[in-house]
Amino acid sequence: MYLTGFADEASEGLSGQIRATRALGWENIEARSIDGLNIHDLPDDRFDRVRRELDEAGVRVNCFGSTIANWSRSVDEDFEPSLEAVDRAVRRMTILGTKLVRIMSYKVLLDPQGRALPDQREGERFRRLREICRRFTDAGITPVHENCSTYGGMSAEHSLRLVENVPGLKLVFDTGNPPLTPDFGKPFPYPMQDSWELYRAVKKHIAYIHIKDSRRDPVSGKEVYTFPGEGDGDVERVVRDLLASGYDGGFSMEPHMRVVFHDASVTAAEDARYDTYVEYGRRFMTLMEGLGRPLLK
Image (cartoon, rainbow, N blue to C red):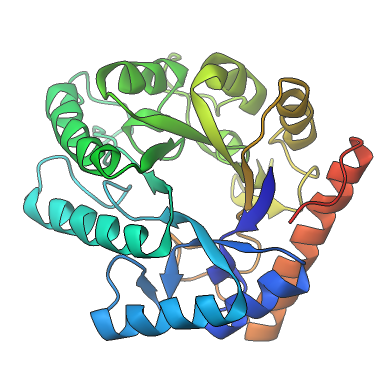
């Protein structure tokens, strides 16, 4: 078992990401973006420098937080750029010895009123994801799908249909996404998902955990991100159950409190980003101690 996180929430640059990781006493980063570019999109010479910097710092990348098939991607767009990103990711993950890659399952198709269209193009989604996952699994890499605002995150039923139709695909469960994500498995107007309910439904397919916490502001309806255990993500309850069930994988921090990857309007000064990320990690370690588990790296 180990701790890690999206260190790009601490700093745009790799040196700041490494510094935050070391301040927490950790040895891993879930690499998403460096200098504003996803790790599978960095120029080759920049990636070579990233590899050297990580080696010199004694920090490893435990997971690629890729943008493959994410919420900004249409299931009907040209497939070739996605496959090129997959192949670049495979090459770079092999160099780094990284065995997990976070993927998604394309944007949800909605009508103008916000209702999910009856035809979500499942056949095409599954076809594309089977090819994406095959390329990863052939290289000894496990693709993990995140429950977010894409097809597989629409409801527990959608998650289960996805893993049933895409061989080799596992799940990364994000504790903080359900309180902010409509449950398309229920009647319109869709209520927000229940984190504990979703976790229990998909538990046997979970291979990795994102630690985030959140709630909807009851007045404005806006997204509010909190420290772990202070929102509606059932963080402590989920973690307690995982530990009792023998979970031995990673817990990856994704605070979203100072910067939000999918919302460029949410910004903060570099020192505030760094301090919040480190505080978030420390608070999660305190939560783990309260559950009777020692500090992890």
